[in-house]
Length: 388
Length: 158
Ligand SMILES: [Zn+2]
Image (cartoon, rainbow over all chains, first blue to last red; front, top):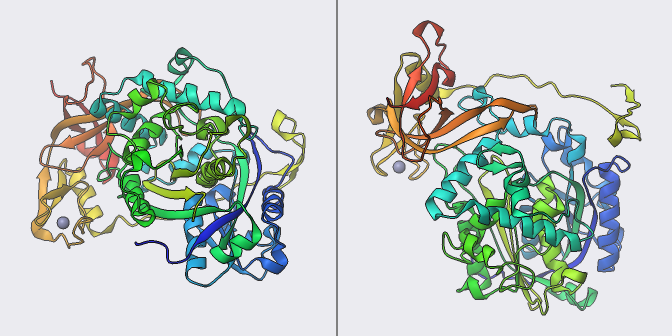
């Protein structure tokens, strides 16, 4: 992929939540709330201006077959082009960008949500994603994959487990300054290391807890974006990739799905040295070690460096390269298919200097990276900038 | 689906409770069936791609690396010994409840294979470490049904 041949910007953002439970709102009402905010933010009337809608969702999370049919009404998108991605929200962003780049639309909404608290057996639903012939008969909780991968990561990179715990301390503390965060906390390293084991050496505190929420963005073609807002956030590069889904043949060390995705996004954005290219990073931290592994896969540091980097404070909000100033999935809560859009939301607010007490000074460029979660090997990357 | 008047903390408001019943069969496939029959005989097979020099376990009909067809001639026997690549003790059951004692799971590279196989790992007091030599233990022949569980577990090589 070369440079995007059409400029595309994010001109509006809205959200609902995030909260550990939301018994009052239906998922439709959460979407309506987030969409209303996003359309107001963009200054558009969806019934007049919206050309299309792209959502990311998964039927088993919704508990509804063919659930993509349930999205247009509460998004102002009835009788528009509607397109649903079974994947992470950043893949829906990519689909929206492509619709504009292809000339099929001028203004597109991108949406994803989580109503995780409605899923009474989320662990069993995740287990249904395991291979039905070769793994499901073993009847093991899929978190075993994270336990195996964490031990492999520690072994190969010689990273001390304390550095993994440090990610949790940092992100949950960052969340204290984020009103969207469902799980802000001031923890010690011991709190993290001594919390109950899930899949050794992974502890409960190293795993993001699910949360409810919805995120909506409005995308516009460059010329339209300039008429709508004086603070567009430009999408400079996008990439996504899926590794072998088999446990047997996937990469257990370096998250090569994200390395591939990043290479594509960097090429598109013309970035040769990612290490010096960004003012902040929002990256998947569904499990604390994933933040370290993903930073390395993104080429922001060498394999084995991310833990030491974190321990030195380089990834704190005041550090050399702030990582997850929002609090990440650990602090905000894991929004299932919307978790990539939650990362993107923080990056957009940072680039618009609307991040309040956690604002990274002079943030001009940001990197966003997502992972589709257990047991997948899918990652997506977006490069954002205040300049087109 | 009755309208639920729930009383626990999450549910001061009304919600409907329902469940989805989805039943089906999963075709093991040409390679999958033969591989599972192998387990029933107490043997672990792989298919080795001659172009990529990579051995798949379970055996597959295709190579994901070069997209080549893996025919009859590519079937090889692997294991039953191998090397522990990673391991974990899982403390939660599928329903989210605590699992006590925990269940030990290993990631094993069988001798002659490139792929890594996941299965239960027997703890016999040998300190577990990456690089430990392990071996496959099968269920008694009469109990085997052509399932991944015909392989009972891996255990440290005595
Ligand atoms: Zn091959």
